[in-house]
Amino acid sequence: MVDKLIIFDTTLRDGEQSPGASMTKEEKIRIARQLERMKVDVIEAGFAASSNGDFDAIHAIASQVKDSVVCSLARANDKDIMRAAAALKPAGQFRIHTFIATSALHMEKKLRMTPGQVYEQAQRAVRFARNFTNDIEFSPEDGSRSDINFLCRVLEIVIAEGATTINIPDTVGYAVPDGYAALIQKIREQVPNSDKAIFSVHCHNDLGMAVANSLAAVKLSGARQIECTVNGLGERAGNTSLEEVVMAVKTRRDYFRLEVGIDTTQIMPTSKLVSQTTGFIVQPNKAVVGANAFAHTSGIHQDGVLKARDTYEIMRAEDVGWSANKIVLGKLSGRNAFKQRLQELGVALNSEAELNSAFGHFKELADQKAEIFDEDILSILSQEAKSAHDHETYRFVSLSQHSETGERPCARVVFIVNNSETIGEAHGNGPVDATLHAIESQVNSGAELILYSVNAITTGTQAQGEVTVRLSKSGRIVNGVGTDLDIVTASAKAYFAALNKLNSNTERLNPQCS
Ligand code: KIV
Ligand code: ZN
Image 1 (cartoon, rainbow, N blue to C red):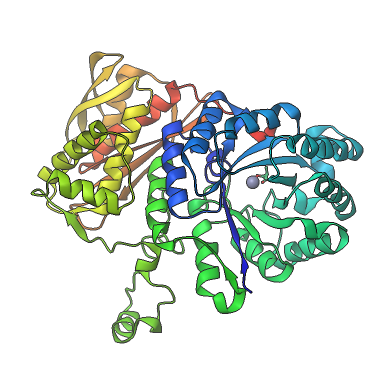
Image 2 (cartoon, helix red, strand yellow; image 1 turned 180 degrees about the vertical axis):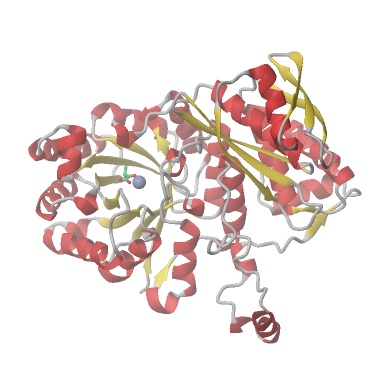
């Protein structure tokens, strides 16, 4: 009998806690549906008590997702737990994930509670959650830095109260693989009723060891759930990366001897969707989903791969959903071909109107670009989803700019502000700088630009450019993404997307800051 490894995805909760990664309800629904298509076992859809927006997003996901368990985070108090249960109510199968910090440092400095109070609150929270579901996960926050004896006492009582999954977070990414595995082993040995719960790992990547720590605990101490995010998205250095743990367990089945239910061919589409939605681009040398992950450029490697793929390839690109930049559609492709390709990509649009609008944008792009790839189609759909649902104070109309060697570039941007047309003009150090100054000459946002990056969606000089702009204002950080064949236009679109986010009120409470 081979054990199953449960994949618990927290892209929409812990991933979303990264500065600038916050998503709209529609974006979260789209990602949740893609996670379901990838056959993730549990989707942590958010933290219901953090904001009305997050509550609505979890509620909508719980109504639409049928094949994965939908989960909400809740602090260990009645109010949060009731909010989680209410948001999750429409789901076929749901889980409440409640947590409280157990390390001396967090209890004393953050919670200002005694260990006795924390123990009681954990017990009460799980008992209360049992009124709503039998599927309860409990996390002792900062578990990897908690006193083992106290930790074991808390875990024993929450299991006795009905917690079915015990998750041990390495909240600050401090653990090392054998130490983390040994901690989980000790807990399983020391807690008398540990056999009544599934043990789970939740690692942060501050020292670059999140994946190694998670896999060590799975291999050496019987943890059977990994909490992870797509592309390793998450606060600071991120969380355990879903694609890396899944492909490690699949590729080294001889070593791990575990089953994972993930449809790995959905890994790339999910990775692209998450990066295009959040503006967190994937580094080229990132394992599994980086642009270079399957590129053999050295002569010796190319020669080997041509003779026999397994000389240098341990995984096949197509098994993780790389479409190898196949030309899929062109200028002459009709609406039916477009619709069929969407179906093949697993994209379901909600209405004929959405299909018509996406097809219109596809045609516009096909007029300018001979070869349309899957990545282009996914990017059209991301932009569609944004413009259909974002609160838009600003809308880009057109751009003209001039740059010439030896001259200071200038730009003129036409855009709509609250239904009236506005024109901004400015010079700058380069065409992008001039364009952003032209926008700011009218908007005066007072925001600070803290990141600007350009990425090509596909290969070649015909590729669309994808620009990410990160703005910060009054402690709030947002990302805006824009795509276009012209990277200066993409920059203007990204800048407006970020300004629109700054203007929309989607403030969320961070569960770990309170
Ligand atoms: O890192 C952490 O401790 C968490 C918990 C809330 C599970 O994300
Ligand atoms: Zn976390």
